[in-house]
Amino acid sequence: MAWQVRVPELQDQLQCPICLEVFKEPLMLQCGHSYCKDCLVSLSRRHLDAELRCPVCRQSVDGSSSPPNVSLARVIDALRLPGDAEPAVCVHHRNPLSLFCEKDQELICGLCGLLGSHQRHQVTPASTVYSRMKEELAALISDLKQEQRKVDEHIAKLVNNRTRIVNESDVFCWVIRREFQELHHLVDEEKARCLEGVKGHTRGLVASLDMQLEQAQGTRERLAQAEQVLEQFGRESHNEFIQKYHSMASR
Image (cartoon, rainbow, N blue to C red; front, side, top):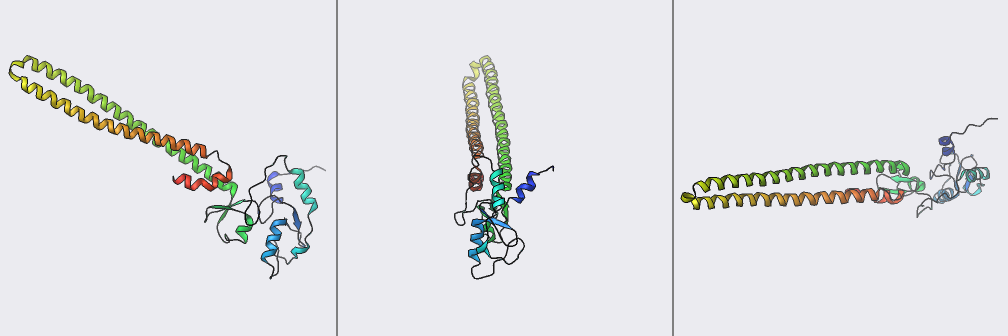
């Protein structure tokens, strides 16, 4: 008999309906649906005084007499790759942090969204949020690079203007000297006054451009530093990335 296994479908069948992670110590209810041991225990504690119903089919069940689903556990053990890292867990329910609460902007487990303080909040799988935030980070870096290109163009224009003004000043000074040399016996005082006026005006323009250059170069350095910080932040682990993303992006 030939077997055809589709990985996405197999992954769906191996996920706990509560925490949305691969089953851990799976237990089977009387209705046939399975849950992680910790998820079922937490669910039973919340219904001590009420009838426990299966979250999937809503059939009345007895959570205290749920046997281990040995076959399912063996399948999971057989498919688990050696060296798989244990996922980060919720401090309240000890379940994997597999969801992201869009309202509170934090990682939560399946029970937090089903029974805890995040009930009726919009939640998204952590993997989807990670991909979305990575795209947003790439967009931020792209914006930074675009701003950096604009600053570079502005600096180039300032440098060109400074050079042009200095060169024009040299030409004007040469022309003035030549003209006044021909008439020095009549206008020595006027020559000195004009030369000082041109030089003073040039100094003012150059000083203004130097100040603008210094400010623009400082802006370019800050943008480069911000880009470096964001690129380094992009290499953080998934959980650290998600938890720090909004504060880092706003900075």
